[in-house]
Image 1 (spheres, helix red, strand yellow):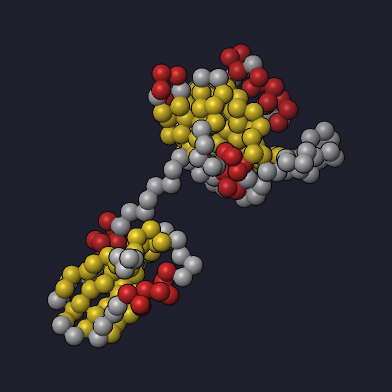
Image 2: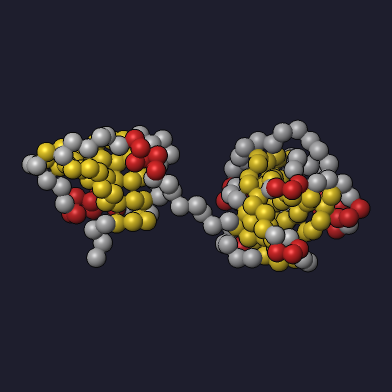
Length: 229
């Protein structure tokens, strides 16, 4: 779905009579607009009549400055298959009489092709990204569950085993840590960045044990720990 070119007031009025309005087009959106509403830049799942589920991927955003009547606002756009789209509109709270929750809530609009098909109303941003199903009419929207990090690229990048092959010891949301041995009296702990898949030697010693993992777990969001009891 392409970004909107109407003012916030006109846009929301159009959503109230969805079947009669066409989704307007405008220039390509920015990839991120930051706060307010930065947390909304994620994926969603739309459930449509007959139970079909459509994945909605964040496709960009645009910002509008304030005028004499309204505060500025940010529109974020999400694209799905079969022409389905989602738009979230977050106020900047910089108008003459901003609402108390203008920066922490967003208006939710759903489209298909060039037509508006539903409006979820103004909802707290925390509720939108909570993963709860937000139902309105015969539609529902929920934040998609985060995909677990994949380690297959890391495993492909690991050094070829010399004595004992690499074994996954620790997995966090950002890194995977592997233990290996290149000889019978040497041990090594390597890390792999899950985004870049760059391998780094963390520890090279005669031996490595579970106590050595402590500093890598501190403050990290641990997904798997082979040393956990």
